[in-house]
Length: 248
Image (cartoon, rainbow, N blue to C red; front, side, top):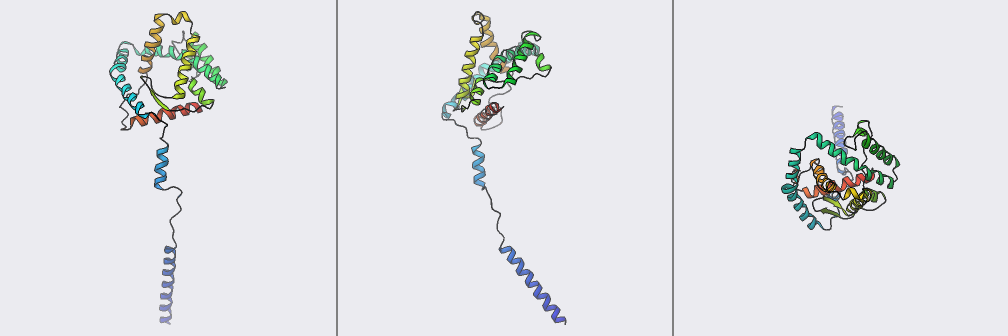
C-alpha cells in the first residue's frame, strides 16, 4: 500500500513538471505594436519643422542674439531704469488698446462674432473710462482680450504655415505669419489718420517706444533656455504656439 502511495506521488510530480514545462515552452512575448525604433522615430517627427533655409535661419538667429545682447537689451535696461513700473503699465495698456483694431477685424474675418464684439466692447470701455487706453478697466470687469492677427486669419482660411523663417531683429516666424504681419501693418496705416502719422512724435512712439516696451515685457533671453538645442526648441515652441493660436 505504501509503495502504491509513493508511486502515485512520483507520477503526480512528473505530470505537474511536464505541465509546467509545456506552459513555459508555449509562452510567447506579447505582440508589440511599436518597437523602440518606432517610438524614437515618432518622437523625432513631433519636432520636425519645415526649415528649408536652416543655414540662413541659424545665421540670423545668431545675429539676433548678438543684436539683442549688445543693442536691444541695453536700451531696454535703460528704459526699465528710467520708466517706473506704473508708467510702463500705462504704456503697455495704451498699445494693447490700439491692438484691438487688429483683434476686431481679424475676428470678423475669421467669422468669430463673439470675439469681434468683445474687442469692440473693450476698445469702447478702455478708450473712454480707461482714458484713451491708458488703463484697462475692461479686463478688471472680466472682459478679456482675444489676440488675433492676419496670420491666424490665413490659417483659419486653410493656408499652411509654410517654411519656418527667422526675421532679422523680429525673430522666429514663418511665411504665412510674415505675410500676415505685413498686411496688419498696412491695414493699420490706412486707419491711422495721415496728419497723425506725419507727426514726429507718432514715429517716435510707434517705431521707438513700442518695440522697446514690447521687448521689456518679453522675458525670453537668448542662450538662457538651458538647452543645448535652443534653436530647435525655439523653432518648435514658436511653430506649435502658432498652430494652437489658429485652432482657438
